[in-house]
Image 1 (spheres, one colour):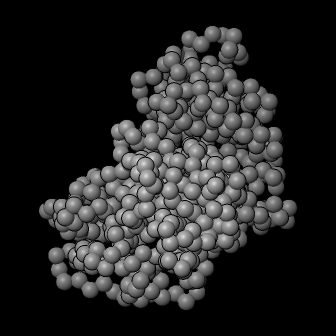
Image 2 (cartoon, rainbow, N blue to C red; image 1 turned 30 degrees about the vertical axis):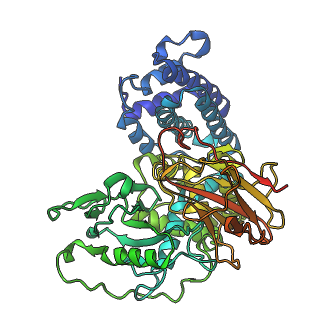
Image 3 (spheres, one colour; image 1 turned 60 degrees about the vertical axis):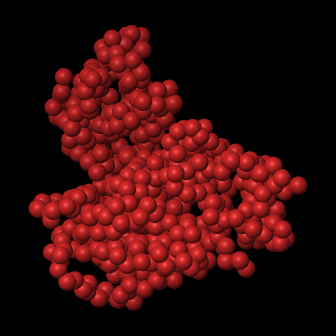
Length: 585
């Protein structure tokens, strides 16, 4: 049974007039939802003792689709139709209660049911809130400064990847011609060597591959990326939309290493492509091609990769097959080319941040599933696509309450560290990267610590903030990471261990060494095992080959597992675990 949008709103709004009634209905709904997803049982079959009053059953029955069907688009249209009126603290409490109930329900449902449950439950929560705060009930609710702050923090987190991508694009493309790690829009950056400790353009850079990247705008026409035969060399060319989702990932794992041609098209483009060109459609006009080509770092291998880079081409469709000279880039002297991008984003005022977000959201719309959060954010006049954010119009109390939103929003993002993935032997890692769905906090966190992260099938990035005793790392303490013989990270691509300072940048050191990896020649123990040394001081010539230099202060090590094995042993299924880093004896 599919109930029209207006009927759904009417049904929901008629059931409760107060926050208390909303709490009661929400609790009953989650009982119905839990049973529906766990057993496939119709809501109407749930024992009456769990579902009084009767309207809860009626609401669940009218909105939930049959277990064998997908969630109807009609439900999402209902979310777009419902624009909730501002909430007071009591209503905000209801919203938080619904979120907590959703999390507890997640833990009780099998993993297979979680995606369906998340989509259905999130949407219906939004619908319930919308109905509870419909015009008929708006007189009961009044927006408070604290309520506005809650909305603004959610909006900040939602837009954080989009704003960070734009600020990164500005810095990396603010040159007249390609040079080093920068190139104008639509032109390839061909980095000829690994980044060093002065590199501050993106967080958590790597020193295993040579970046071959570009920012392109596909709003008007597609761009064609041509990759020559890589002769079995490992490479990966993920393509990210403006929200940091990897929408395609050509490379050795997925498409092989033979010659390839791809047309990256915009969301509204329709046309005919040349023969032999594969279309990759982006959902946004802004696209980041973030190519990585494996290199051992020797002069001979640098030369081989440079040759491959020079043969890669990127041209607009209108110039494909013709002589093409890209136009010179426009340099904006107002763009800060020295301060790290993350620091620039974090330094934006509330008003500047949301003005930029609103502009970007018009040019790079989010997904259909984002309709509900966008409607929430619009109620306080921020993050409205195409409109100037003017929170000051709400009054002095609101201006004061919203002043610290960027700081509080970023703190919430970084506070997600322990919940971002699993924690094994002091290492935290996730298999939820590259594609995020409606997990906006996860998406923002990955943006903050490693913008441009890949899908887990392509790479997993275990990161550690504390040693085996649970204490933060300090370069003045000596640490050891021990690998038994034959137990290095299991990969089909490559692995590395990288050293970062507490801000996720490389650390200057006398060896100019930022990683240890399978390309290193390690000193082995008598039993064939290997000890890696993480510390500030050189451990001595007999151990220097296994030394990863650290700063004197706080540091953060990160493992990279490119193309992790899918079968035992594998980090993807938990049959391989990264060993703990311990204080040296």
